[in-house]
View (cartoon, rainbow, N blue to C red):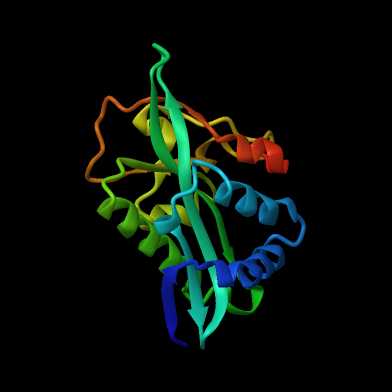
Amino acid sequence: MRIVVEPEQPADHAAIRAVVLAAFVDQPAVADLVDLIRASADYVPELALLARVDGAVAGFVMLSHAELVSESGSRRRVLTLSPLAVAPAVQGRGVGSALVRAGLAEAERLGEPLVTLEGSPRYYPRFGFRDSRELGISIALPDWAPPEAGMAIALPAYDAQLRGRLVYPPAFAASGVSP
């Protein structure tokens, strides 16, 4: 199976939406979240990546801007990874890993300091993510999520003074997706 990761193009949006809907069958609002982020100032085109398997769109990851608010109220722009979606037929075959690695490499190339996410503490540590609280970052999580599901990875441009509370962009609230 050959996986090719590349930035999304407008012609791919329908196929990406189909993959996101298939991956989040119980949360169709996640597909709306992608559209809302694309239409916002938080969208980073270089960090909206798709994976093709045998030429067909089989996965998608989006890293977009959020804010980290310090105790003093200062705000710094950071990235958040959401969503990561892989077509059910190819889940467990390296597509998601290829997308996360490519997204992190591009974020590093762009000089971004940090990537946050809400996700599985069993999956994301393989890429270097760790409990965000270890970096002094708090992430409000849904009641069902364990505290360690708030995760972050410090990239080479990271400054240890980058601490605070993660504030998701308006697209999350508008879509109804609970960050």
